[in-house]
Length: 363
Image (cartoon, rainbow, N blue to C red; front, side, top):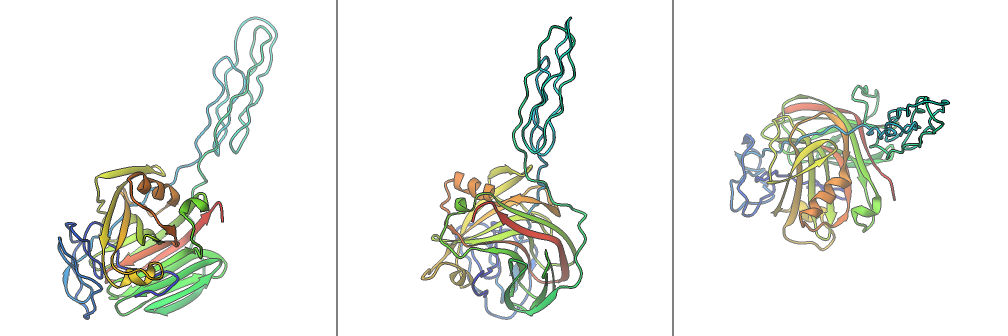
């Protein structure tokens, strides 16, 4: 099990997985579950069961990644109004000038968003001046998908590791033979490797030592670039991961997977230009009890967004996923953690994150 500040439990995507069970939920297997030493964290009722300690249905833990949008262009000035609108991260198109007979007047430039709009072209005709167009601010600039992996770094090996580097919390957890994580003192990046580690997780992100709702942190963004090699056993997930308290919630935003994506749930939401399937279920076991709030006992909730088209690079507006879950009528707790995460169900492989960063607009 994974110790505070972030305990990682085997996550399911609408199916039972090693160490967790989804009551009353039919669970599809993502491949044969690896045989392992006894010590399953939970049993599943109402669906197929995969345990950490016994071979069985593996977990299909794939998720999708969606590229973040560039700043939208603001609307330019309307024809006949010489002013140009600006908007988003890019200038709005210039408004065309009015025509007619008379002296020429240049349209006024519209300002808005990140850049001022271009000036309207000079009109010919009676002395009218164009009114300035305005645009709305665009989405945050997306991550550079060609970012190179930093060199050097510090490597930590074990089955339950936690620490902090360059302002971000990091950790690994496994119920198998262990693995390693490399973090960097001057870069928000990490890499991880595993070798038949059963359920293995490695992550970098923010832990919040307060009892605030996600809305208190403003816009929560996660940016990542990832490159993976090797295999991941019976299941895998690459994306954003964390916990909430009171009620206890283990949540995932799935962007990519070694084994292919398997979106679940009838509800959908369009976020950052991609469509995500949304699902919520209840699970039980010992892992979540250690990552939940003090005094918690029994099962906990899992909330999952799975992107329908995988990607390996992008910006995820995490707070928009929380809002989408709340819109479904799901009760959210106080925010405990937001991490860029990789989880695998065995195999031998590695992953590099040249970019792995989590930010908020409010503290």
